[in-house]
Image 1 (tube, rainbow, N blue to C red):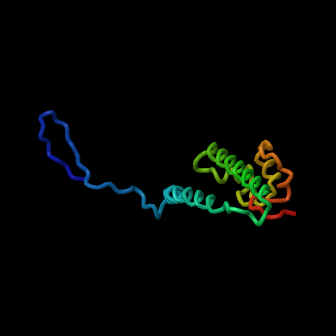
Image 2 (cartoon, rainbow, N blue to C red):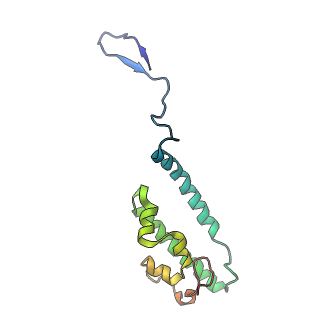
Length: 140
């Protein structure tokens, strides 16, 4: 920090800062590193969600595939709504404690997912999706 000499007669002093560095090196701070990685994790999660939706899932009939897509949208919207309500730094942990991991949820059949997330059966023919999971695979 360099000081500029007083030029006014009021007696106040001014200081000028040449550059601003972080007080803590991001490599040495676990919290700072997690904050920086958190921003990139949100972008990666959105890209993965967009990549998960194929056009026709496992050669299902067109009407069943359409209902599956509708159910997936309802499930994704509910998961996003729940995540927005949770505190910023602990979203994933609190969601995992309450509902399970996203992969565990998506491995269940559609009816079980609706029960776990306490969704109303907005999907008209949920019985058709009884033995199908989020990805369109048969569940026994």
